[in-house]
Image 1 (tube, rainbow, N blue to C red):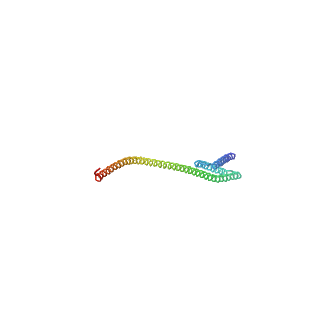
Image 2 (cartoon, one colour):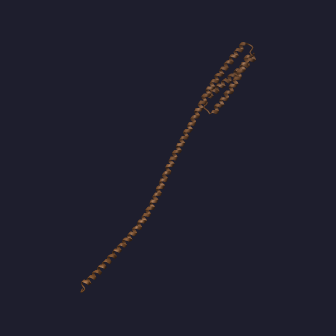
Image 3 (cartoon, rainbow, N blue to C red):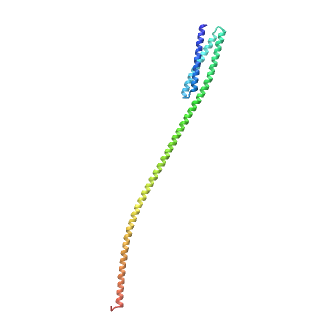
Length: 209
């Protein structure tokens, strides 16, 4: 009987140990904020402890059936029922903690994705802004280049026009000089003609002179 009591106490201590480990792991799951691999690792440890706890409760139940006295048997069976109720309660708390932790991790992952999306949007906006600035700069350079080329072409045309004007001025000056010479020659010819006419008239009208 004494040996049986020792085994019962050892089994009770192991059941208590697994119960405390499960409660501690459930608390860790409640506070777990990720990553998902960490939550998976904690759940694996909880499952292992539940498995060992279930085995030790079954061992305690077998010990109850082996008791010689009915009173001892009923006491141990009562303890077995209490441990099973506690195990079921821990399983309920574990499922709730596991669900809450998964929701928390999902929300954090969604927030991280949204933050990443915002960062990408900002980057795209910045790139778009940089592209817009680059586009304006290129347009300005093109306009300046076109304007410079137009000014150069206009300047060349002005030079050509200046050359043409200078040539025209020379021609006009030369023409004016020639016109003056022609007028002088015409005047001299006219004077000579008048002198000749006067001479002829003088000879005919006044032959005695």
